[in-house]
Length: 466
Image (cartoon, rainbow, N blue to C red; front, side):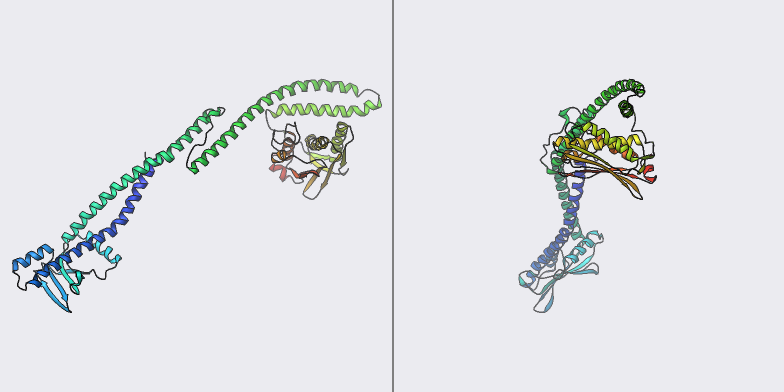
């Protein structure tokens, strides 16, 4: 009960209402004391009127008048004269004097609290203004025990009433919190538990119904999260199935390409000049295909293999990429240019760098061909004291908005229609393995520019886990 939201509201409400009642109680008890003393002054004034009507009162009658007024004596000041109207023996000396005519609120509260917590019965003098202008002032002496008992009785009644109000208010708030907050929160928790038990069941997705705006926002946020998570789980399931299929295809394709690789060894022995010129390229292509199949099979078991870094000539790798894409273009509408300085060398894994450049150049070529207009793809490079920079520039139509938003996300960042969206994701991963970065510099109607940065220092490679 105490650990529940409604239970804590119940306790806090009771405490706060009681605190408010205590703050009300203090000035109330001070007001009650003033009223009590004022009533004694009025009774004393009425008793003194009997003396004004008859100057000679019997002792017994005077004592009865004082007893009814609850005082020992009455002094009335009229016409600048202070006159003892009624008197009786005072059992002990006067302990304090209170002038109600000039007392402020703070002083009245202080005097009330002092009287409430002082158990000793004392004799006090009280001064006030007579009612109906019956003189300048009226002064009485009285004992404090009856006043204190009356204040205690009044205070107990006030506290009892405060407790009843506190409990009643707390119960009302408890019921309101149960209906307005706790029930909707329990409903949200129930939806979360059902969804956690069966994420694929659409019935577990919450339907916002709360009338409280904050709770409705929470329900809408949970609904969005559940929908996105359901889609992600379905996508991962499809990716797992696709991964299994790709692994099977890659396994069989590797066997076929291995057989083809054996035949290329014999083709290299043919004396025909054209065959001798094309055979190394065929061997290289088949070797890369076998390596790619093996890498695909390894991908399902672990991450991309660490790069085998060594100094390589970038111009040769770039020329191989450009020449292969020229053969693929065929129609001559796409101009492919290798602008890499012939002497430029960098530290990289040649096979992985070839895959990165091939993905980027091929994407650029296919984008230009899809636009059905002539274009150009340029592969260039430069170096400085800190890094090597490789730039792939094309004059194509630019990347679509969806591709820009998820550029390096597998299966979501496809740069062309029908693409799987894996090329850029794989390329970015391979570049990160070199301790470098692959960035989209700009894209638009005038073309697209990608930049690869490979660090010269080994610290970047250490950070990449190489």
